[in-house]
Length: 231
Figure 1 (cartoon, helix red, strand yellow):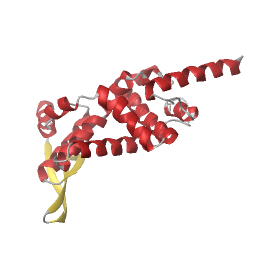
Figure 2: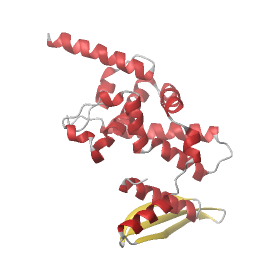
Figure 3: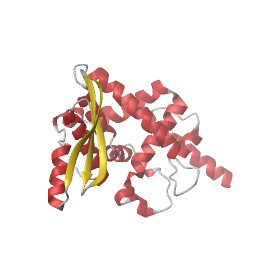
């Protein structure tokens, strides 16, 4: 009876995954692993999350590179980061129904800071699609099943956040001392890369890099905003 129940559950999961990615999984165990939070087992989705994060970043980067041939590195980096940021991935996971499949042992995990389990699971799921179906199919899944129907690129571009202003406003509101410091310059005279470090109350908090001091400050500020979970 247990075997029959498990077989039926596998059939239901296969059907659900087919509805999400457009094709039946060849290796169901990969997808099961991608949906397994570390609270349920030592054999969790963390390694697949690492892989999926890299694959997602590469596919989105290539997509933006081709779609906006006249835009500079700063623009492409910022739009990519907004597409793949944790809040966006959490929302995507819920929109495609993936959040209903994630296995975890503590209901408190879905609240507050730990709500990132859905975004993490989506990255792991992407890792599973990549291993199961290959790069080309995975790219098709990301572009045509995630980005095209659920991501409004026009809205993202028109509402680009000035992260430096956001973090400055946060510091003033909370009475925190905030410092931006360019700590590194590298490259040639015509292609310099800068690294900015942000300190909050004299403690180093975040850093970021860019091909101008302004872009480095924005990158560091964005990382700080994400760490502090402010928009």
